[in-house]
Length: 267
Image 1 (cartoon, rainbow, N blue to C red):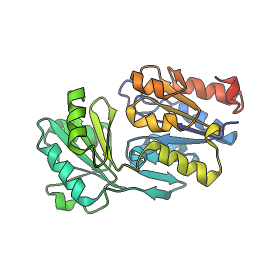
Image 2 (tube, rainbow, N blue to C red):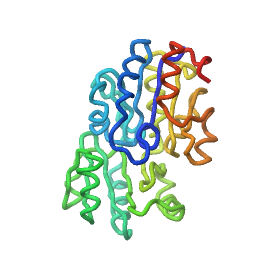
Image 3 (cartoon, rainbow, N blue to C red):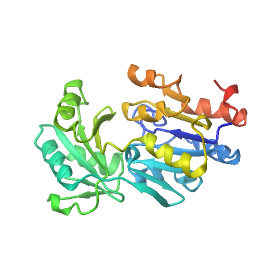
């Protein structure tokens, strides 16, 4: 029987660039809870941003944010990863020196940004709606940084991924997290780590979990449990990391609820 469901957001629950969750998801999360199944949102997004997205059910679920850099359950921080400050500053300066690239520096409560363009400032403040602090000097970043990200408006191409991996891949994990984003996180940080934290604290085995994802930053989580679903539109490498595929997460959740948590009636 399934006891935990974890799902990525962008490209998985949030399709086609959507910035709000489908209304049908919230009653499904409540029904899962009534069956004793914990729903965990697992994303590269900021915790505060995720909590806003899930506002109707935020107190009935759990969170893995910043690609596994932070896990929060019942408003309790289970763990928080961070980068050495020297590496944070080095990566930020490299991003700022690259034409067309913008950075975000993720801490527990804020995204620190120094926008080069009005587009990026508007994207972060009014579209994605993160809790941001716009800074003039890097010394204003005083909190531990869990994740850095580079945004390239035209989309992240393979040569750009290779560029960042060559620069920093020997000192941290460099992974795409969406059409226009590359994330930098400590080697110990990934969504599978957050998943394992919940498994250990709640006494849940890997075979009692179902996970969903669509990007390379989901692969560790998809490989960590036998019942993993990649989105049908995901890249081939991501789909090969999962056991199954689906067009929509909600379709599988409805089947799981109908089967009262018996995954054998779903797959």
